Image (cartoon, rainbow, N blue to C red):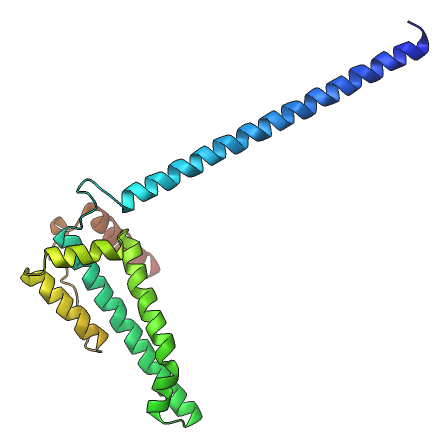
Length: 191
């Protein structure tokens, strides 16, 4: 080949290599996106199936309902106590009458209460519809009625009863026993 044809052939060869390299990079990028999208969809479906319809068709067990109502009671009472402190602090700082301070913080309190109850439900992976259905299904149950009464009272400012402590380690779940052991080890390590 003459020198100008040789350089032209090398240029073509380099251009071909560059195009093939770009095509390979584009192919790898496309594959990555497809795999990532597939994983994201699978995760979303898994989360939806776990929180939505479980083995019992999405129905909430009585025990789980009572547990959720108990946690809601405790969270609601904590929010009320925190709001009371804020009202009193504002009254002390500004001299505004207590009833005016309550009025000013009322809307924020209502929004915070909704958020607290929503978060407890979210932590348990249940919807408001599931809670309502479970309350209707268990409306004659004394334990559920007691839990609902405790929630109403907590929302009115009465402290909920403290949850019963497990008497012995054997009565605790394995996770609770492990947590207790770790806490004891930390306390002993800090002495």
